[in-house]
Structure formats: structure tokens, C-alpha cells
Image (cartoon, rainbow, N blue to C red; front, side, top):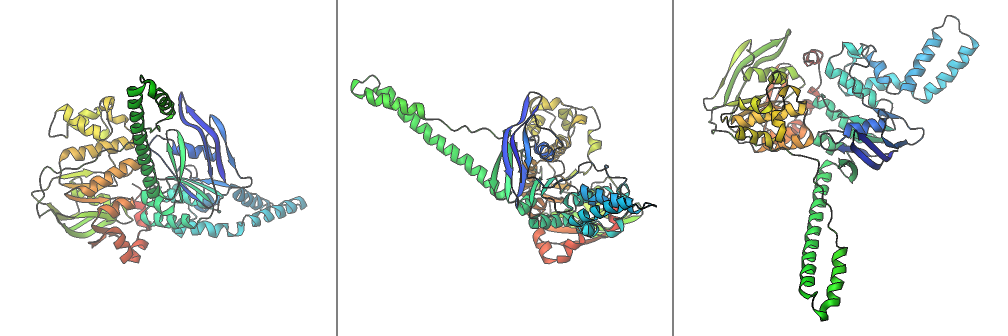
Length: 545
């Protein structure tokens, strides 16, 4: 068990947390949720001992081992992959190195023998003989193939590094496991494997994630950070959402009834306070009135942007025709004679392990890259808006947010432009903020504003949920679902894919698999589809960018 006792953290004069008391018990997986800036990652750092609270303390059951997901992707660059994973149990790793050093001595003394025997006993008690096979099993489950296990971490591409660090956190059956955004940059197959691992994990897990589907799958309780406090709810994310909304409705209804009672008492007092025969009743009602207290209903720190894509014109029957598109990137054929057509009601999810292949297709369709061969043709009635995975070039200038968006607006009126920015939570002075200093999430919201203001009837999204908080993801998901035009998109968010797409296109080894179906039906109808969501050597190399 791990608990926070009267924990307060102040940043300057602001209290991020104040007098937080909470216990996380064995056998539960807790989803730690809250708005951006609420302090989810900060609270995990306090629990793990990486950050000291201003006051209060963290208590861990004596003898229990805590493990957390490292965020520094370069910390273990000089270590072999297997060693890095085993370092998840630092004591076990230290014993391995110490006894190896003893056995390598040219002169082996009696003292060395005694020490080695002691180390061997502790090594066995920590399941050291299974350490290497356990580490390999974790790596293989996450899609890190055996050929990488003895390489240095620095020789791996970024997506594989993420998986190695995740395997390190999971290694050795820790008593308490802290995971901050563990699904970030994972392919869908690795996410599915992690879901099953956590479902079967019998100790304590506390996880921060913006993936609603993931939280619904793995969580038994939700710890909600709001107003500087943390409140526990039994059940998964959907149950939390329903419970929290019900609680607010109940408080509002209780307040409404209290307000009616207050009004009734006030009217009686006003009417009969001067009446001698009713004065005792009026006095009694005054006392009753003084005892009535309305429940304080604080506005949540969560803010939902309003995302609504409205096409300026209706789309015709001819949307897009793609014929024999081929493209080679860095010597690898990522698109190999791909052909398809889009209809006016298509919402297509691009899936598959090769991020480069999907991004390349988007860039070709957006006119940013030429294919090696083949062709594509947009219908005459179509207008396209494109959300690139890398948007850094868009914001490498000195424009303010208002000026930046105005250049893309058909209506140059500042009030009109500020209306779109207001929907995306850029209010007041935010409009004059320079775009080059925006955070990743703010840049995404700017790009979505650009797409909304364009009035396009075809939307292309390459991983739009990256950098967004859960509220913004929910708003985007709703906007995509109700959009009356055509969408072609890729996303690691299972719920976005399942609730938006009516057609699945998988690119695997450059080839296209195209099915008219929902995502869950696609996975259920083809068990091999999930197995294909694993990085091959060449695809993982491509995916580094």
C-alpha cells in the first residue's frame, strides 16, 4: 500500500495540492485523471520520491518495492537493452554485477567465496535466475524483437526506447507501479499487450493516461484531481464520468429544493413578522432559515473546447481516386502500388505499425510530397484541410495567434477570428500570444481552429490526439463523429478510431488492406490483424521520424 498523508505542494503562492489524504491499496489499478495543469504527473513524482512535498508525507508499506516509468529516454543509452530492463529491480541488478565482478577475480579468496555465497542466496530469493528470461518476455510482449535485446539502448529508434523503459518499469513484479502516460508512442498491439498485463497484475498500479479506452479496460478505481484535492471513485473512467455528473446533478437539485424552501420561509417571515399572533411562528422560521446552507458547487478546472467542423459546401459523389501510388523512403518501399477510392460518406482510419507509411500517404494526398509513381485525383467539389503530425514549421514565426489564424480565414474580421479561438480556449490576452512560444497542446488547438475556419469538406488527420488532454480529445472525437463530410485519419486512441471510422485501411509492408467495417469488428474478424501491429526491423527504423 502507498498513501499520501496531509500532502501539500505549493508552487510560489499557489497551492497545487492542499492537505491531500488518499490510500492506494493492493489489487487495484487507479486511473489518475484531471485537467491539464491539475498536477497528475507532479503527484506521481511526489509518490515516487522524485519530488518533495511542501508538507505532509508519503508512506509505503515496509518492504514493498516501488517502480515507475522513466521519462528520460537517454538515461540508459550506454547500457545494453536487457541490462536496462533488469535495472527495473536495482537491487537485483547490483547483485548481478557484484557477484560477476567477484567471479572475474584472478585470485579468489575465502572472503570472496563467503560474499559470493551471500549474494547468490539473495540473488535466488529475488528470482535472479529467471531475470533474463523475464526481461526477454516483457520485451517480446511489447514488440521489441530478440535481435535488439543485446544492443545498446542508444542504437534503438525512439519507439523501441519507449518500450524498453516500459519493460523496465514492469520488470520484477513490483509491489507498487507508477505509470505516467505509458501508451504514448506505443503501437496498438503493444497497447493491447499492456492492457492485458495490467488487467492480470495483482499489485498496486497508479496510471496517468489520456486514453479513455485504456482507462476503461484496466482501471478498477479513478482518482480525480480537481480543486487541488483528489477524490476516489470506484469503477473505470466511464463509471467515473457518470458518477461525477450524477453527483453534480444531485447537488444542483438539492440546492434547488433548498432555494424553494428559503423563498417559502422568507415570504412567511416577511408576511407575518409584524403579526403578533404569528410572531412565534415567524421567529421559528427565521431559525430554520438560518440553518439552511446551500451546497458549494465549484466550477470544475476542466475546460472543454468546442470543436465543430462545418463544410462550406456539400461534397459530391466523386471524392478521391488513388491509383498505384508507390513511394520509397530511405531505401524502403513504404507504399507499394496502393489503389483505392473514397465515397462521400467514408470516414477512414489508417492503421498499421509503420508510422512513416501513413504519414507519407497523408503528405502525398495533401500535395506536400510527390509519389515515385502512380496518381491521385480529388473530386471537383472537394476542399481539403490537413492536420500534419509535425506542425513545427507552422509556428516558426513571430505572428500572434490572432494574426496567424487570420491568414487562413476567408473572413478577415478580428472578432470573427477571435470567435474561433475562443471556442478553442484562447480567450482574452491569449490572442496576442506569439505562436512560437505555444505548448504542444496549444499548437494542436490552433491547428484545429485552422481546420474549422477553412470550411473544408474533407478532413485529413495524422495523429491529432498527440499532446491533447482528455477534455480536448473528447471534444475532437465528438467533432469528428458529427462531421458530415469525409475524414481520413490515423490515431493511437482506440475510442476515437472505433467511434469515428466506418472503414479501416491497414498499411502493412507497403500493401493496403481495405475493409468497410468498424475498428472493433475489424479486429474481431481477423485475429491476425492484431499480430500485424508489431514493428518489423525495417518499419521500426522508418518509424524513428
